[in-house]
Image (cartoon, rainbow, N blue to C red; front, side, top):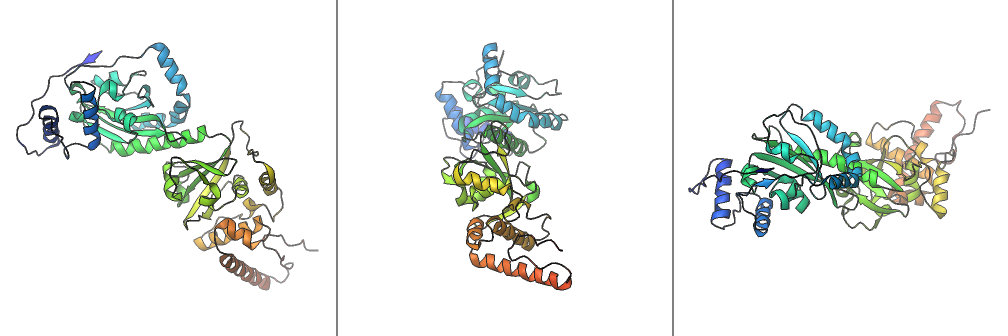
Length: 426
């Protein structure tokens, strides 16, 4: 099925007071005078217009929204099963969120082919009803300048409204789209929100970016095999939200992928990662593996000086939660942390949540000392701090315990090693 529309007359005056006049002037400069409409539309839209012209397309052409073959639809859905699984929860949420609007959410694969779309209550939509069917190709080569097509082409979030569309028959649409990337930082899909014959009544670009990030975070975890997945943020309540940082660590102790939030916290690039986990986290692999047995978030100070809250969990292809495919001494160290010995069981050192930053730091040092059997040098190296800082925390802890003993003379004498339990009273 095709759509067509007569060209609207361009404005002759060089000044404008509305968005419609600005876009009309941009189209007049580009399509009629051959001038570059810089400042009137975004650079992304200009580049898309240039690509469409180079493909010998005409703005007044009719656009076909023809479905690909049934076999190709089946192949596309099968090939993007992991993406659909990762997006299922967010798509259900978007369906409920957009139910009171005339908007539709559209999910495409990396090539721009629609693999899912939410339902719309708008009965007057003609273009959007055709464009949102599973199997329709929304790539730039097929439908010109649209938000999902531009994201497929550039990998960057995009918004396109009315006359910014290359083809005149699509100028009834407004759309905003954002990429969904995989663990290799390739675009795995595009999430788009579109509306027809009326403007958005909310910030569609921000909303679609938030949901795309949530889908991406889920996809990164699904794609991980034999990894420790670390969640981190400076505010513990942000863990488990689209704003959390995520990082994948393999059995060699290498940081193999990070999401955008983690890249900013750790100051590492998202693409072409070749850095050891210990360099950016300040933790040995066996310590990180031991933290996977903790339920609550742990405060940790990164080598860059930033204090973050983090959790870790095993991500195994066979569903194993206790075995992380580690070898040699590292595997033995991880197994040792699971033993019920207080001197090595770091995850069990802090039964109560800290109520202040000072208390959190104190508990962190205690766990590190217990983890390394009271060895100050190893604890300091694991924490990424000086030995002097660890000694100061030890003195503070010793003073606290001495005060406690002084007020309770009937208690047994204190153990000589931090983290070692006191002997049972006779």
